[in-house]
Length: 138
Image (cartoon, rainbow, N blue to C red):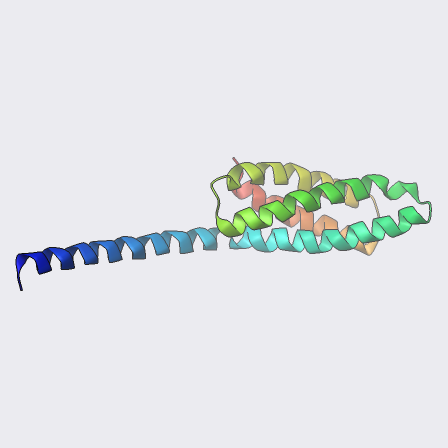
C-alpha cells in the first residue's frame, strides 16, 4: 500500500465518521422534538374538529362561539407551522414554540368556556401542546 492510498483511506474514514456523527445529531434532535410534534399534531386535529363545531353553531346564530372560533383558527395556523418546524428541528423552533405557547394557552382558556366535547378536547390538546412548547421556548 502506498502513501497516497493510506491518505485516501484516512480521508474516507474521517468523512464517514463525520457523516455518522451528523446523523446521530439529527436523530437525537428529532427524538427531542418527537413529543412536540405529537402534541402539535393532536392540537391541530382536535382544533379542526372544534373549529368545525364552532362554525356550525355560528351558522345557527349562536354568537357565543365567535371568540372560540377565532382563537382556534389562530391556534391552527401556528400549530400547523410548529408541527412542520418541530419535525425539521429548524433553528427557529424555540422562538416559534414561545409564540405557540401563548396562543395555545389563549385557545385553551377560550375553549374551556364551553361544555361542548369538541371544545373540551381542543382545550386539553392545547394545554398539552403548551406544556411541550414551554420546555423549549426561547
